[in-house]
Length: 189
Image 1 (spheres, rainbow, N blue to C red):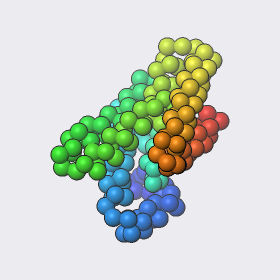
Image 2 (cartoon, rainbow, N blue to C red):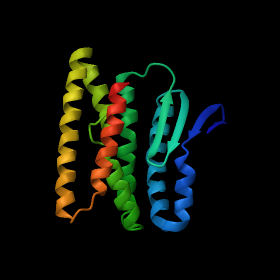
Image 3 (tube, rainbow, N blue to C red):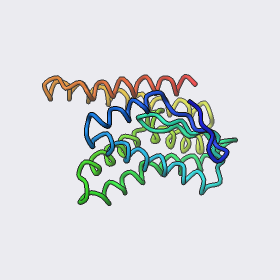
Image 4 (cartoon, helix red, strand yellow):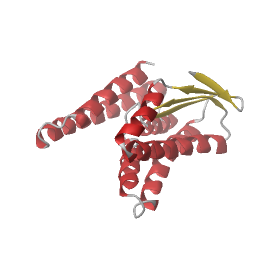
């Protein structure tokens, strides 16, 4: 579904209504997670606007948003916009640590997870921008691919360890599979 507000296109994933529906049956945890994601993505949007980037589309999904900007983005600007979300998530987590332990936990994990240097996360975007700033294109591409692959393998090994350590709680393994798929799609583009 595509909506246009204030001259900007907003896309809404078909899973967002499902998330709202689940909110009424799962308690406050979904609302807490949604608040953490909204604060994180608002930081990206605000940083992009403050740095003079023109928003083309914003695609909302249950796991975050994808903000597309018009034109070519300088590497330093890309790094600042990519790191703004995790930074604000971590700051918001510590600001709310005495008010809501659930929000503290979700926001902190969301901010730290987004710092992983894999293509589908903000850390991967920042890594690409920084490496491409200092290295030739082909060399930078190889460096980013190797670093991302190493972190994906480490994340997979950690998730297998957690799977056995927690008596077969496969949630981290499913998250890892999602990250693999999203990263593969990002690297293929």
